[in-house]
Length: 260
Ligand SMILES: C[S@@+](CC[C@H](N)C(=O)[O-])C[C@H]1O[C@@H](n2cnc3c(N)ncnc32)[C@H](O)[C@@H]1O
Image (cartoon, rainbow, N blue to C red; front, side):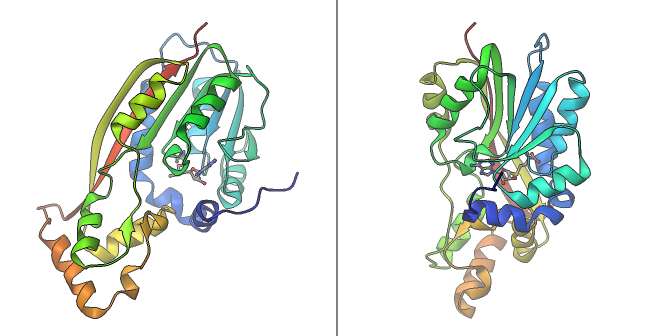
Protein backbone atom coordinates (compact mmCIF):
# COMPACT_ATOMS: atom_id res chain seq x y z
CA UNK A 1 0.00 0.00 0.00
CA UNK A 2 1.29 3.52 -0.77
CA UNK A 3 2.58 5.47 2.25
CA UNK A 4 0.49 8.60 3.01
CA UNK A 5 1.92 11.87 1.75
CA UNK A 6 4.57 13.34 4.01
CA UNK A 7 3.42 16.21 6.20
CA UNK A 8 5.94 18.39 8.12
CA UNK A 9 5.55 16.39 11.36
CA UNK A 10 6.13 13.11 9.51
CA UNK A 11 9.12 14.59 7.71
CA UNK A 12 10.73 15.81 10.94
CA UNK A 13 10.24 12.48 12.71
CA UNK A 14 11.46 10.49 9.71
CA UNK A 15 14.60 12.64 9.66
CA UNK A 16 15.15 11.96 13.37
CA UNK A 17 14.51 8.22 13.18
CA UNK A 18 18.17 7.22 13.51
CA UNK A 19 19.00 9.55 16.42
CA UNK A 20 15.66 9.10 18.21
CA UNK A 21 16.42 6.11 20.44
CA UNK A 22 19.63 7.59 21.83
CA UNK A 23 17.89 10.90 22.69
CA UNK A 24 14.62 9.47 24.01
CA UNK A 25 15.33 9.14 27.75
CA UNK A 26 12.30 11.22 28.71
CA UNK A 27 10.08 9.35 26.24
CA UNK A 28 11.18 6.04 27.81
CA UNK A 29 10.45 7.30 31.32
CA UNK A 30 7.03 8.63 30.32
CA UNK A 31 6.00 5.53 28.37
CA UNK A 32 7.08 3.19 31.16
CA UNK A 33 5.06 5.23 33.65
CA UNK A 34 2.06 4.99 31.33
CA UNK A 35 2.47 1.20 31.08
CA UNK A 36 2.39 1.02 34.88
CA UNK A 37 -0.97 2.77 34.82
CA UNK A 38 -2.74 0.11 32.73
CA UNK A 39 -5.52 -1.56 34.74
CA UNK A 40 -4.02 -4.73 36.23
CA UNK A 41 -6.89 -7.04 35.23
CA UNK A 42 -7.03 -5.88 31.60
CA UNK A 43 -7.53 -8.81 29.17
CA UNK A 44 -5.77 -8.03 25.91
CA UNK A 45 -6.13 -10.09 22.73
CA UNK A 46 -5.21 -7.18 20.47
CA UNK A 47 -3.42 -3.90 21.03
CA UNK A 48 -2.51 -0.83 18.98
CA UNK A 49 0.40 1.53 19.68
CA UNK A 50 -0.66 4.86 18.17
CA UNK A 51 2.36 6.95 17.14
CA UNK A 52 4.70 4.04 17.88
CA UNK A 53 7.90 5.74 16.62
CA UNK A 54 10.78 3.24 16.58
CA UNK A 55 8.62 0.60 18.26
CA UNK A 56 10.14 0.60 21.74
CA UNK A 57 6.73 0.36 23.43
CA UNK A 58 5.49 -2.17 20.89
CA UNK A 59 8.23 -4.41 22.24
CA UNK A 60 7.15 -3.66 25.82
CA UNK A 61 3.52 -4.43 24.97
CA UNK A 62 4.54 -7.68 23.26
CA UNK A 63 6.36 -8.75 26.42
CA UNK A 64 3.42 -7.85 28.59
CA UNK A 65 0.79 -9.49 26.33
CA UNK A 66 2.76 -12.26 24.54
CA UNK A 67 -0.31 -13.99 23.03
CA UNK A 68 -1.98 -10.83 21.72
CA UNK A 69 -2.05 -9.51 18.16
CA UNK A 70 -0.03 -6.27 18.15
CA UNK A 71 -0.05 -3.32 15.74
CA UNK A 72 2.22 -0.26 15.68
CA UNK A 73 0.99 2.75 13.72
CA UNK A 74 2.92 5.89 12.85
CA UNK A 75 2.67 8.70 10.33
CA UNK A 76 6.45 8.85 9.72
CA UNK A 77 7.78 6.22 7.28
CA UNK A 78 11.34 6.67 8.61
CA UNK A 79 10.27 5.80 12.14
CA UNK A 80 8.48 2.69 10.90
CA UNK A 81 11.56 1.59 8.97
CA UNK A 82 13.51 1.64 12.24
CA UNK A 83 10.69 -0.14 14.09
CA UNK A 84 10.49 -2.94 11.52
CA UNK A 85 14.28 -3.40 11.56
CA UNK A 86 14.89 -3.11 15.32
CA UNK A 87 11.67 -4.51 16.80
CA UNK A 88 10.02 -6.95 14.40
CA UNK A 89 6.92 -8.83 15.46
CA UNK A 90 3.90 -6.55 15.42
CA UNK A 91 2.21 -5.36 12.23
CA UNK A 92 3.44 -1.87 11.42
CA UNK A 93 1.10 0.53 9.62
CA UNK A 94 1.89 3.93 8.14
CA UNK A 95 -1.21 6.05 8.77
CA UNK A 96 -2.58 9.08 10.56
CA UNK A 97 -3.87 8.56 14.11
CA UNK A 98 -7.01 10.45 13.06
CA UNK A 99 -7.89 7.77 10.47
CA UNK A 100 -6.83 4.35 11.74
CA UNK A 101 -7.17 1.62 9.09
CA UNK A 102 -8.47 -0.96 11.56
CA UNK A 103 -11.97 -2.36 11.98
CA UNK A 104 -14.46 -1.05 14.54
CA UNK A 105 -14.33 -2.85 17.89
CA UNK A 106 -11.14 -4.71 16.96
CA UNK A 107 -8.80 -3.66 19.83
CA UNK A 108 -8.72 -4.22 23.58
CA UNK A 109 -6.02 -1.64 24.20
CA UNK A 110 -4.99 1.55 22.41
CA UNK A 111 -1.69 2.76 23.85
CA UNK A 112 -0.17 6.06 22.79
CA UNK A 113 2.84 7.73 24.36
CA UNK A 114 3.90 11.30 23.53
CA UNK A 115 2.38 11.29 20.05
CA UNK A 116 -1.07 12.87 20.32
CA UNK A 117 0.21 16.39 21.03
CA UNK A 118 0.99 16.53 17.30
CA UNK A 119 -2.64 15.88 16.36
CA UNK A 120 -4.61 19.11 16.13
CA UNK A 121 -8.05 17.59 16.53
CA UNK A 122 -7.88 15.66 19.79
CA UNK A 123 -11.66 15.10 19.82
CA UNK A 124 -11.47 13.12 16.58
CA UNK A 125 -8.55 11.05 17.94
CA UNK A 126 -10.67 10.12 20.97
CA UNK A 127 -13.61 9.31 18.66
CA UNK A 128 -11.35 7.12 16.53
CA UNK A 129 -10.03 5.30 19.61
CA UNK A 130 -13.64 4.82 20.76
CA UNK A 131 -14.53 3.35 17.36
CA UNK A 132 -11.76 0.73 17.27
CA UNK A 133 -11.96 -0.28 20.96
CA UNK A 134 -14.11 -3.20 22.00
CA UNK A 135 -16.59 -2.48 24.81
CA UNK A 136 -14.55 -2.59 28.03
CA UNK A 137 -11.35 -1.76 26.10
CA UNK A 138 -8.88 0.86 27.31
CA UNK A 139 -7.19 3.91 25.80
CA UNK A 140 -3.99 4.83 27.68
CA UNK A 141 -2.21 7.96 26.47
CA UNK A 142 0.46 10.41 27.47
CA UNK A 143 0.70 13.78 25.77
CA UNK A 144 2.07 17.29 26.26
CA UNK A 145 0.22 20.23 27.78
CA UNK A 146 0.82 23.97 27.87
CA UNK A 147 3.82 24.94 29.96
CA UNK A 148 5.99 22.54 27.95
CA UNK A 149 9.25 24.25 26.90
CA UNK A 150 8.15 27.46 28.57
CA UNK A 151 11.79 28.41 29.23
CA UNK A 152 12.49 28.37 25.51
CA UNK A 153 9.33 30.37 24.82
CA UNK A 154 10.40 33.07 27.30
CA UNK A 155 13.84 33.25 25.74
CA UNK A 156 12.41 33.62 22.23
CA UNK A 157 10.27 36.46 23.52
CA UNK A 158 13.27 38.15 25.11
CA UNK A 159 15.02 37.92 21.74
CA UNK A 160 12.06 39.84 20.28
CA UNK A 161 11.71 37.05 17.74
CA UNK A 162 8.64 36.00 15.84
CA UNK A 163 9.82 32.44 16.52
CA UNK A 164 7.75 30.79 19.20
CA UNK A 165 7.23 27.50 20.88
CA UNK A 166 4.23 25.53 19.63
CA UNK A 167 1.08 26.02 21.60
CA UNK A 168 -0.11 22.93 23.43
CA UNK A 169 -3.58 22.13 24.68
CA UNK A 170 -4.15 23.13 28.30
CA UNK A 171 -4.76 20.51 30.97
CA UNK A 172 -8.33 21.77 31.04
CA UNK A 173 -8.71 21.16 27.28
CA UNK A 174 -7.62 17.55 27.83
CA UNK A 175 -10.10 17.22 30.69
CA UNK A 176 -12.97 18.63 28.62
CA UNK A 177 -12.22 16.48 25.58
CA UNK A 178 -12.00 13.33 27.69
CA UNK A 179 -15.25 14.19 29.50
CA UNK A 180 -17.03 14.66 26.14
CA UNK A 181 -15.56 11.57 24.46
CA UNK A 182 -18.12 8.98 25.51
CA UNK A 183 -15.27 7.09 27.18
CA UNK A 184 -15.09 6.76 30.94
CA UNK A 185 -12.09 8.58 32.42
CA UNK A 186 -10.38 6.26 34.91
CA UNK A 187 -7.44 8.56 35.42
CA UNK A 188 -6.18 11.92 34.18
CA UNK A 189 -3.20 13.71 35.68
CA UNK A 190 -0.46 16.10 34.67
CA UNK A 191 3.15 15.85 35.84
CA UNK A 192 6.07 18.13 35.03
CA UNK A 193 9.30 16.44 33.92
CA UNK A 194 12.41 18.65 33.88
CA UNK A 195 15.59 17.87 31.94
CA UNK A 196 18.83 19.87 32.10
CA UNK A 197 21.30 20.83 29.38
CA UNK A 198 24.69 22.52 29.35
CA UNK A 199 23.65 25.34 27.00
CA UNK A 200 21.05 26.48 24.47
CA UNK A 201 22.87 24.72 21.64
CA UNK A 202 22.49 21.42 23.52
CA UNK A 203 18.77 22.13 24.03
CA UNK A 204 18.13 22.69 20.31
CA UNK A 205 20.34 19.71 19.35
CA UNK A 206 18.22 17.52 21.62
CA UNK A 207 14.95 18.80 20.11
CA UNK A 208 16.29 18.03 16.63
CA UNK A 209 17.44 14.59 17.77
CA UNK A 210 13.96 13.59 18.89
CA UNK A 211 12.32 15.10 15.77
CA UNK A 212 10.78 17.99 17.69
CA UNK A 213 12.55 20.90 16.02
CA UNK A 214 9.20 22.11 14.73
CA UNK A 215 8.33 22.85 18.36
CA UNK A 216 10.13 26.07 17.63
CA UNK A 217 8.19 27.72 14.86
CA UNK A 218 9.44 30.64 12.83
CA UNK A 219 13.09 31.55 12.96
CA UNK A 220 15.75 29.14 14.09
CA UNK A 221 18.27 30.37 16.69
CA UNK A 222 20.99 30.12 14.05
CA UNK A 223 19.09 32.57 11.83
CA UNK A 224 18.59 35.24 14.49
CA UNK A 225 20.65 38.41 14.26
CA UNK A 226 23.68 38.44 16.56
CA UNK A 227 22.13 40.80 19.12
CA UNK A 228 18.84 38.95 19.25
CA UNK A 229 20.66 35.65 19.68
CA UNK A 230 22.67 37.12 22.57
CA UNK A 231 19.40 38.26 24.18
CA UNK A 232 18.01 34.74 23.79
CA UNK A 233 21.11 33.23 25.44
CA UNK A 234 21.11 35.83 28.20
CA UNK A 235 17.44 35.27 28.96
CA UNK A 236 17.82 31.47 29.14
CA UNK A 237 20.90 31.91 31.39
CA UNK A 238 18.71 33.69 33.96
CA UNK A 239 16.89 30.38 34.42
CA UNK A 240 20.04 28.28 34.92
CA UNK A 241 19.88 25.81 37.83
CA UNK A 242 22.76 23.91 39.45
CA UNK A 243 22.11 20.97 37.06
CA UNK A 244 22.10 23.19 33.96
CA UNK A 245 19.55 24.94 31.73
CA UNK A 246 16.11 23.51 32.50
CA UNK A 247 13.67 22.21 29.87
CA UNK A 248 10.20 21.54 31.24
CA UNK A 249 7.79 19.02 29.73
CA UNK A 250 4.24 19.09 31.13
CA UNK A 251 3.06 15.53 30.59
CA UNK A 252 -0.61 14.54 30.72
CA UNK A 253 -1.36 10.89 31.51
CA UNK A 254 -4.83 9.58 30.71
CA UNK A 255 -6.49 6.19 31.08
CA UNK A 256 -10.02 5.88 29.63
CA UNK A 257 -12.31 2.90 29.26
CA UNK A 258 -14.98 2.28 26.64
CA UNK A 259 -18.18 1.45 28.53
CA UNK A 260 -19.03 -2.25 28.38
C1 LIG B 1 7.93 11.62 20.37
S1 LIG B 1 7.60 10.30 19.24
C2 LIG B 1 7.04 9.03 20.35
C3 LIG B 1 7.27 7.66 19.79
C4 LIG B 1 6.94 6.51 20.76
N1 LIG B 1 5.55 6.53 21.14
C5 LIG B 1 7.82 6.60 21.98
O1 LIG B 1 7.31 6.94 23.06
O2 LIG B 1 9.03 6.35 21.85
C6 LIG B 1 6.08 10.82 18.48
C7 LIG B 1 5.65 9.94 17.32
O3 LIG B 1 4.32 10.29 16.95
C8 LIG B 1 4.21 10.19 15.55
N2 LIG B 1 3.08 10.99 15.08
C9 LIG B 1 2.94 12.33 15.12
N3 LIG B 1 1.76 12.70 14.60
C10 LIG B 1 1.11 11.55 14.24
C11 LIG B 1 -0.15 11.27 13.63
N4 LIG B 1 -1.00 12.25 13.31
N5 LIG B 1 -0.47 9.99 13.41
C12 LIG B 1 0.38 8.98 13.72
N6 LIG B 1 1.59 9.19 14.29
C13 LIG B 1 1.96 10.46 14.55
C14 LIG B 1 5.57 10.72 15.05
O4 LIG B 1 5.84 10.35 13.72
C15 LIG B 1 6.51 10.09 16.07
O5 LIG B 1 7.01 8.86 15.65
